[in-house]
Image (cartoon, rainbow, N blue to C red; front, side, top):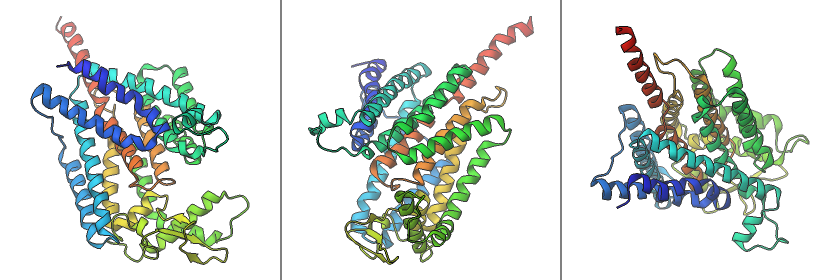
Length: 430
């Protein structure tokens, strides 16, 4: 039977090392890889220790999680296609359970073991960044090799968008983890590199998200404001205002695309306004889980478009109706009840970014703000890009939460404080 260190070296470490590369070259593989990691850790604990570390949640997270899953199941009763949507709910439930077991297993490792895993993940991120640059700048040689495509065939660079976001998110998280150990020059160099990296890829959303994440860090690094409360307020305002703001913006711009507006931005504005108008019809309970894909005007295709005349219609080559905005999608599918539950969960996640603000140990604003910058990065992407229930995106968001709760800085700060007390105590007595 291998020891825990051997298991982490040849299983856990290998998966964490390969995960960034998988997100770039085969983004759909992120979900099975994370499930494999969770199941593998549970089986190892069961075989080696004779028991499994069951997830432990404090009262507030447990209530919020129970309310979220319960509301998802309840929404099946008024969803468009409940016989299909039930499989989505079961899948989301399975991913959340895997995340809980993965978090508990990683938290039960000692500090040295967790640091080794973070180093391996960091090396994997460097590999992922290299592959992303290679694929985006050298006409996708690895993708052509894996997919057996000739160089005369076109490879859409947007296929790497998820990898760009996923690897960037891991980079922000790891920078936050190591902020204490880096001097000003190294911190600034890495921060600028992370901010600039998306500009070498095709993901417009990642470019904007990286700028706003960088802005968040710089602004609150030098302005003495409670960044955690400000972040909660901005998230709340985003959820509350978007359905109305998007309709107002669309009425001002209209169906004709302005010369200075990208097509993708105009499309998003239209779909936000269209779905927001539907929100007003069922604001309390919403239209049910995954209703975005089973829009009532076109239940099988789930497409909606806008004609040159400004008329709305369903057609095969139109935009898919997931609204490219997590807040509006949750409003549309889960109503105000779902919005309140999600806001409560996001509030807890934002609180978790306050990793080093511990009484008696001082404050390390760098780490806290970098964790918050990671949150800002993912939040902006969620407001501009994939549907919230898409497998890889939902798994990516969950994996960020797993990392945040599995590799806390609080324990390191607490141990440091205890060690200081033990060192100082004999001197005082003397």
